[in-house]
Amino acid sequence: MPKVAVGGTFQYFHDGHAKLIEKAFEIAEDGKVHIGLTSDEMLSKSHNIDNYNKRRALLQQHIKKMGFPAERYEITRLNDPCGPTLEEDFDFIIVSPETYPVALKINRIREKKGKKPLEIVYVEYVMAVDGIPISSTRIAKGEIDRHGRLKNRVEQ
Image (cartoon, rainbow, N blue to C red; front, top):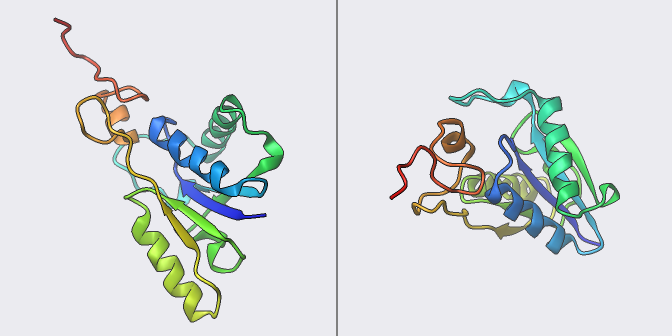
């Protein structure tokens, strides 16, 4: 049973987040998905971000809507970018282009510790209708909605 790690802040849960979560469950098959959720202390974003407990509750709601039962995953508080992946045995890590360098760092550290490297599963960004990646920052700025549709645009 594969043990899969995926992590993020998951603010303004959007289609890019959904793609990462879906891939994690697909790779896990009958195994477990371990979702690292960034702690409040670790955050340094330019826009307002909900507190950990609110983001956790909203993440659980979205995962339930996606049809994945609670017993197939667990959410862990991330106090550093690597979380439990340095000590625990995982098989896969699911990453976006933004988090790919962290996965490389995790594998370097794991190898130094004599642990097997994680298989990195790279998930491309989901693009908004304007061809620019969907991101929580763009949503916070009011540029796009969670599905990448442009906002404040004059319809022709």
